[in-house]
Length: 144
Image (cartoon, rainbow, N blue to C red; front, top):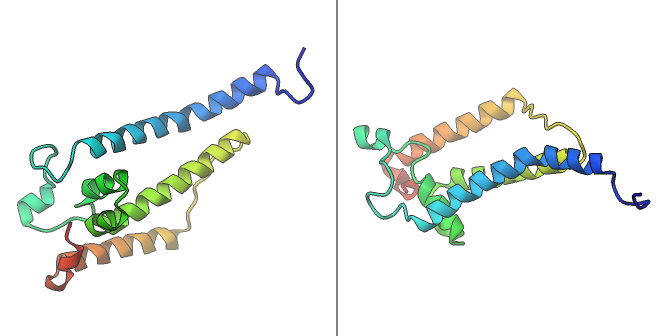
């Protein structure tokens, strides 16, 4: 017989099943960050070069993302922001989104992501401005 406060086995199994996907995503992301933390992207030859940078000499919005992830893993937030500030903000935003996902999964609620179009257009515009400015002569401080 179960205690008064102990959840029934079916409830516990249901919760574990709901947390399986968020746990798998966390494991994959943690593995990727661990790999980038160990294999330094600042050392040539470990990762492929950005095709846009290689072909045109222009930095895409993702250029420096691996270097920023490496710096985050090593606790150097300033270096991470210098390598690619939007990527660091993206890591933080995805961590918040993952946390909301887990809380909702524990409660048995689905995760619904329905951002308003103005938010999506604003984020796209900010990335476009970031990309243009980092490729202008005065935007050298945004180079990875």
